[in-house]
Amino acid sequence: MKTLFKPLFLLFLTISSMKSFSQKMVEYYEPVKNDSIRIGKLDSDFLKYIEKGYTLAKPEDEKNISGVIVFLEDSGFENKNMSAKQIYSQANKAGFAVLSVSTEIPLDFFFSDSSIIDAHKTIKNAFEKNYLPNKNVFLIGVGLSGHRTLKYVEYIKKNQPKFSLNISGLIICDTPLDWVRQYNEGNRDRRINFEEGAVWEGTFSNYVLENNLNGTPKSNLESYLDFSTYSYSDETDRHIKYFQEFPIRTYIEIAIEYWLEKKRKTTIDNNAPDMVGLIAQMKLAENENAELKIIYPQDSKTEKKNTAATWISVDKDELMEWIKKQSE
Image (cartoon, helix red, strand yellow):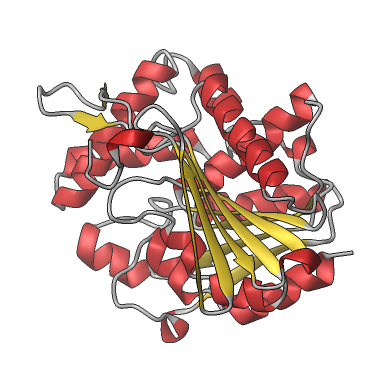
């Protein structure tokens, strides 16, 4: 156990708060479970469990919070709440609180309902304990967090729990949604064996997909289509109905030359097809408040290209204007 936790709190949830930069920070986490999960075939292929709980950034004027932005974001590693932090200033200035929620599973794919239920209980707890207004709620997902966001919305729509967020909009940034495409990308990265990071990611993601979806897309396509919140291979577009009522934005960065030179990836070996495809299907479902936002190379704020870099390049001031426009 990290020394961050005092012995007195080992059996209880830890709570801390502090003020800085005209905002109030609140943390509420459970002690880390002394266990790990397997992510590959090797003896070293394990990831330790992480803290389950939330971090909340509230505006200084807590009595007049305009709305809440929610991230289903990991609490582990050195990137704790990394995506949420980048919009604290703009959100708090606009009167919005920012809530970052984590389950205990690192790199959680939301394979099981238990993870989604854990996230939902944490959200409910955060709203009730901190007297957050259940209005003007926006869910933002970056990378794998975007997949979690849509799986969470789908679960809530299907199960109709007593406590339910009044969602006003969804923002999905550079996210894998089509796990058939993602599996094939991983297979290609492993086959060409060109770049170490891509090979590791392909090996990891395909291992957990095969083990949790009971096979490959060739042997069990239906399982992959059920798990994907959008898939080009799904002729029924079975999941779109869960999201079609919401204002939605997706973000991608056009970096074809970078991916080609650095990792020998093709135009479908990235998350852009998923972002475009989701918006295309939303528009076909007559959602006229569905937008694709493209970041071009000249507008990028980093030389490195990945989901984190795409989110860094998103104009947060403009995004907050969009959020306020969708609010009551």
